[in-house]
Image (cartoon, rainbow, N blue to C red; front, side, top):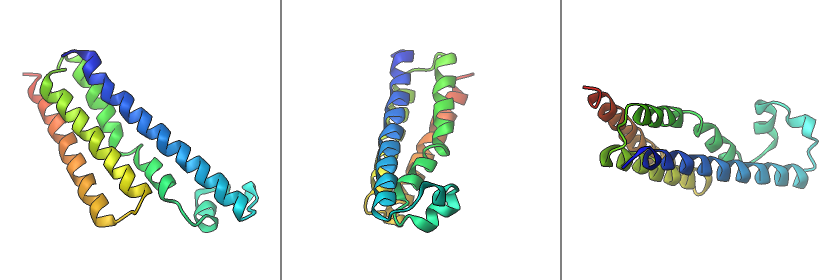
Length: 138
């Protein structure tokens, strides 16, 4: 396995972010059009939340710039330290799968208990990935 194998999960996460961004955009535009809301009336996030009924995609989009930032950094560290082995690549893909599941729950039926469990599993996988990378430095 090589750097390419470790970078593919980053492209998958970027694709997930794009899908959620597009969904958020279509939902926002649709809600603004249906509610005949002027764009200036939703200039801030607080105004948007007050005017728009469904903020799941927007909330999930924000989530994709929280914990995943550490994921992207871990992949960079893995590539730079030549640690693109089966374990690191497997952990990276596991994180991606869990984030896809998290986004599906969040943008879908949004059961908080299910979403939180998937979030915790993803966070655990991410911290194990960081531990493996740290151990690989010695």
